Length: 78
Image (tube, rainbow, N blue to C red; front, side, top):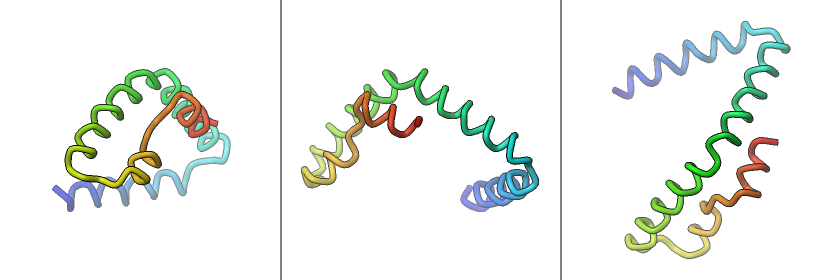
């Protein structure tokens, strides 16, 4: 499985390297739009992940850094 993921990543890297700046910029804008569209779902899933991590003893400071909020998602999108 890791070999498959690695091969796909290398292929994607070649495609990105060959893409125009305009195409790369459009891809980033599209990704940002999708991130914002999915923000509520991401935050809900993140909260579930954080609860599990807390049960497993992950330190509070790390949990805080991993916690998604609407502002943090907006920051990632920008």
